[in-house]
Image (cartoon, rainbow, N blue to C red; front, side):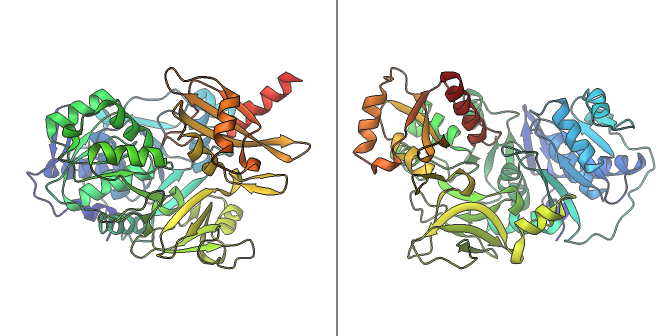
Length: 493
C-alpha cells in the first residue's frame, strides 16, 4: 500500500477535516490532492525531486504533503519556527526544487550566504491551481520509494534528514492503529505539529486511515483547545506532557469524561503527572516511544493495560533489543541501549552514508536511548545515552533524579545535566522551575533528595529559572542547559 491509498476508500461526503470552522469532506480532500499534484507536475516537478513544505497546521498542509508524494516527489516538512539561515541549510542540504508555503519566505540572502547560486521556486497554497486540461503523469511507485525527509531537531548539532519511504509511513500507521482504540466515528483533536512524525502518524495519517474526522488547531493554545473539544465533541487526542499538565490544572473532569483515549509522546511523561491525570480524569494516558528515524512509533502501552513509567511493548512487526556496549543483549532488569528493527525504520540519513552506517549498524536502528525490560517484557526508558552522567565513577541517570525532584511540592519542573568537574569528572546540575509561591531553598531541596536517593545522585548545583528550553515536541533541550551551566561557572570564577 502507498501513502495516497489510505485516503481513497472513505465516503466522499464524510467530513475529513474541520479547520477554523471550515469543513472539508474526503471527496473534496481527494480532489485537492489530485489538483495540486497536477499543478506540481505542470511546474516541472519530477519523480524524486525534493519539495519543501512550510506551514502551521492546516488542511492545506495535509493536502500539500499528499500532493507532493502523489506527484512522485519527496516532501520535506519544515518546522515553522525555523529562521531563515536554518531553512536555507535544509534547502541546500536537500538541493530542494521548490517550496510550498502558506506565505512565501524571505530566504534569498540566507541561501546566498551558503553559496546557493539559483533562485528557489516558491508557491503559496492559493497559487496552486492546475492548468486546464492537464493530467497527472502516473509513476510506477513502490513501498520502498522515498516519500519524506524529516529533519531531526538538531539539539546535539546540525540536523540530519531521516529519509522515510512510503512503506515506512503506511506500515507505521497501520501498526499504530492496530493497538489504539480508533474508529471511523471518532472526532480527533489535531494539536501536534504536522511537520513532526509524531503528529503526522499518530493523528493525521491514522485518522485518515480509519476515515475519522480531525479538528485541526493551527498552534496549541489551551483555552482554544478546550473550546474545540466542547464545540465539536472531540473524543481522542495525542499530545505532549505539557498539554496534559494543562488539562490537570485547567479542565474539569466532566469536560473530558467522553474521551476514548489520550496518547502522550514526544518527551517522557513524568510519573507525578501520570498519577495526577488518572486521579482527576479516571483514565490513564497511554504513553509510547518513538523517534523520527523509526517513523516514529516503536513501542506503546496497551489500551487495556498501562504501566506507570513504561513506554509499553513493541508494536506489531517491530522488534526491540536492549544491547550492552559489546552488542550483547542485556538480561531482564539491566540497562542497555534500545535498538529497533522493523518496516518503520528509515531508509537512512539524506546524503550521510557514514552516519547512516553507524546508526543502522548490524541491521538495527541504534536509538542512543537507555532502557530496561521487566519480567513481562515491558520497557522502561532510563535516559539518553549522551545525557548519562558519570560522577566519581558512578553512573547517574538524570531522569531518575528529575522524577524525584518533581515529587517535591514546591517544584513544577526540573531538568538535570552533567557539567565538567575536576574532582568528580562530572558534577550534577539541576535546573528547577518552581510552582507559584515555591521557595528557593537549595538546602531544603538537597535535604529532600537525600531522603529519596543515594548521596552521589544528589546535584551539586541548583539553578532556579522561569522556564526550561524546549523543542517543538516539548522535549527539554539539555544541550542548551549544559551551555548555560558552563557559562554560570565561568562567570563565577
